[in-house]
Each structure stands twice: as C-alpha cells, then as structure tokens.
Amino acid sequence: MQSFNFAKRHFNPLVNRCLVWAQTHEWRGKHRFYVWMSAHFPQKLIRYKVKERFFSVPLTELCFWLEGGPNNYYLEEFIPFCDLLSDLEKPFTLLDLGADIGTVSSLVASRCTNLNNIIAFEPNPNSFTVLEQNFSQFALDAMALNSAVSNFNGKADLEADMSRANDHEGQIIRADSGAVDVVSLDSWFRLNPQVKLCSRVVVKIDVEGQEQQVLAGAAQLLTSVDSVILLLEIHPDVLIKTNITPEELFRQAEALRGFDWYVPIVSKDKKVDRTTAFFKQYEMKQYDVIGISIPVEQQ
Image (cartoon, rainbow, N blue to C red):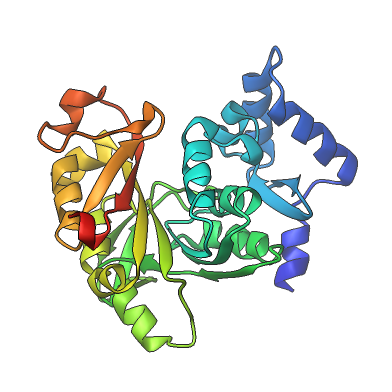
C-alpha cells in the first residue's frame, strides 16, 4: 500500500520529463513557475534517473531548482568530498546523519565505487518516506532509519514544518512524550551487532544543533575504527541559536582523536588554522567542513 501511495506522488512520464528539463536548465520565468507548481502540487515528486536507479525529489524543495537537480547538488563542495573518499581505495561505510531524502548518500554512491554500505538516520517522517523509497533503488546495502541521533536514547519533539514534503532544517527537543525516536550511535550499534562497519567510516553530520551531542554519543565508535572522515555542517544561524562556536565543535571531535580540517569550497588542500577562530579565516556563512582523522603515529 505504501509503494502504491508513493507512486501516486509522481507525475506521468511525459510531465516528469518536462519537469526534469525545467529543473536542470536556466530559463526565463523559472522561479515563477516553481512558485506556481509548489502551490498547486505541494506533495508531488520529480523522479530522476541516477545511473541505473531512480531518485525522487520533492517538487517544492527550492535547492534542487537552484542547483539543477540532485545530480548537481552543491557539487563545488561534494566533488572534492567524493574525490577524497575515492582516494581511500579501500571500502568504507557512510553514516548519513540527518539524511533528509538521501541526496548526499546518492552523490557518494554514484561517485565512489569503494562505498561498501550506507546507514542513514532521518527523524522527519515526511523526508523519511522519500528516503526509504530512494534507498530501495540502491544496488548496495543501504539502511534507512526513521530516528534522530544525539547522545541519549529516548523521545523528542521535532520542530519542523510538517506541511512540507520535506523540511531538512527541523530541530529536536528532548521530550518523554515526543513522537520522534532518538538514539546515540554507540548504543544503536551495541544493540544491532549484526550491522557491520568497515574499518574506514565516513560520518556526514547535518543535525541542526545536535552536532556536539552526536559526537558525544559516538565516542566508542569513532575511536574503535581505523580511520574516520567527518563532514560537518557549520551553519552560523544554528550556531547562534545553540550558543556554540565552530571551535567547540572541532574540540569535541578532537577530544576523541586527532583531526585535520578542510573547507573544500574554499580550498581542498589548505588546512583550517586551529590557532585562529574559524570565522576570522572564513566569511560568515554556511560551510561543509571535512575532518580527516590523523593516524596515531603522526599525532
């Protein structure tokens, strides 16, 4: 029944083909068209072909209209990230925390042949419905879980616009009677020993203010594997709202093991200077920052 209802959210093939063209090209009146379509078809999905699988995106999600669809999603940041992962050569596991509909997982899967498996967590039930269907198209082992990640196991309320097909900026507030499940990574893997990790683990963290808690709840995991790569969103608005700084996030990770930090959209080779405040080195705006664990013998 769920698959049938999900299929009804797609347009017929001819309309879908036109919408893919409209989203992936620049043309006069594009934004007005997006606004009109979003008002009239708020729950509809546009279906893309990504290599040999399908990938659906909410019609109402503006970023796909700005970036030219999911295959072109912020490539100035994610191509260097995927190149780094491909250079690992050996297999790795991707933990996609705050996966939304799975766009980052899809980019990594399509660009990194050494990706072994994906484990994704997404608390928003609207986003999760799309994520689960998108993951069903993957040829590799891809697991989607409708849960938030923090440093505790329990329940939370999700502050999000549930009228939207997806709201990837939702934040959780701990509440015993909340509707959202919350887990820590350490406890989840302890309770699910059948789920295996590669010795190289990549963790994408886009959890809208729960970054420190996620790291605290993954201490055992992050120190037990051979190497770790973090993709950490640094968002000024979220930092202000949660009253933390980039330096505090870096220190939280560095308390577990050594990391070198890079901002790929600025330079994929230049390290973040940890002796100087982050926003004294970089313009005050949102960044995806890559942390690469330093081998013990080099620390």
